[in-house]
Length: 103
Image 1: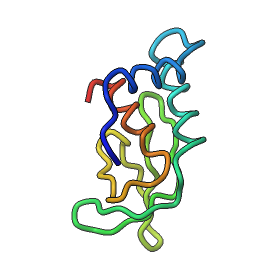
Image 2: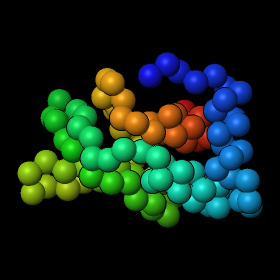
Image 3: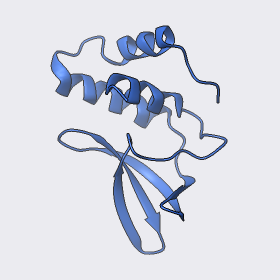
Image 4: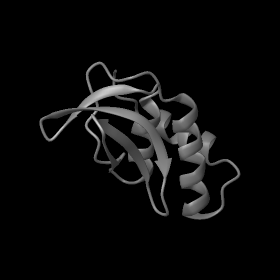
């Protein structure tokens, strides 16, 4: 996936946070867009281990990917999640979240 320009990312942030007041509401708006558009499950590699991203969840201060390997489950902050190549459909919203968070 080609990297989106800052103007595009900013426009997508505005779309996700149009009625949001403060960071908490903006985070909730971004989470809603990621949850709606990100194609899950998908497989990626974390610390050299293949995992399946089953879903995304909203915590008090971040968005996490719920990763699974066998019976094990672990939440990994979406800001830190390595994406596979090719990236899953809707991964552009992860780019938007990272831009919003200053990453």
